[in-house]
Length: 252
Ligand code: PGA
Image 1 (cartoon, rainbow, N blue to C red):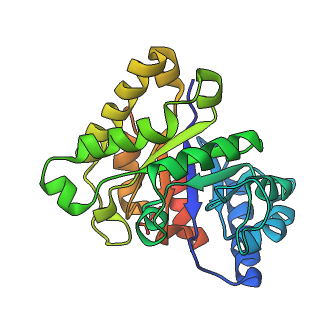
Image 2 (cartoon, rainbow, N blue to C red):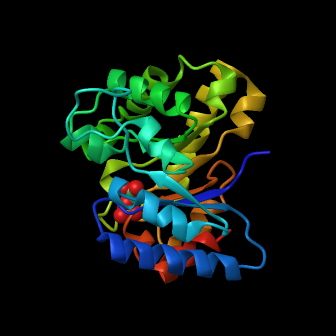
């Protein structure tokens, strides 16, 4: 059976002390939830990984990086490799976020490499995909999502693919306050699950966690998570306040 997951994506927010404080609040709040129905992950800046890892020790909250390099090691000044991320004790890396694709020119091919390096380092991957507003309006969005998933993930064998979580994040809904409706999101989630079924078979598709991201908040999470193919969320803005994040964690 597939897992439900609620993952925070802090993006480029919080200093280390602020992040440590937020992680403490999230850990304590999650510990209070009697009937936790999902895995909880916090995605934090590289600089925060080690400190946040110590805070999370002994609790239920898992740790993610927001990226990793497309090389394993060497002369790549300023980059942070997948083995470095894994050595902090992180469980996941978020890869292919639209902000990375858009602002830092990450391509399908580069992300394929990053996925391989993250998995080789023992990390699980939260792999983001999603269309822009123009692509949605033009009706091209199924093609865009298919290309992103096939191009960066479908070289994996089924065993490796078991370590992939997919996050559908329509770019027009990220940070805009405009959420995809539950029906719009479900349409894409079902499409993604079908792609996986066609490639890896029904069992693998059924076991794959597919998250929704884009202005998900306590007020709309329950309706989104009630859909059969929406297994949780990747949360930006609302992950920066422990109370809001908890409101989403408990929305199942
Ligand atoms: P948002 O961001 O929740 O602030 O819209 C989601 C994301 O980019 O992962």
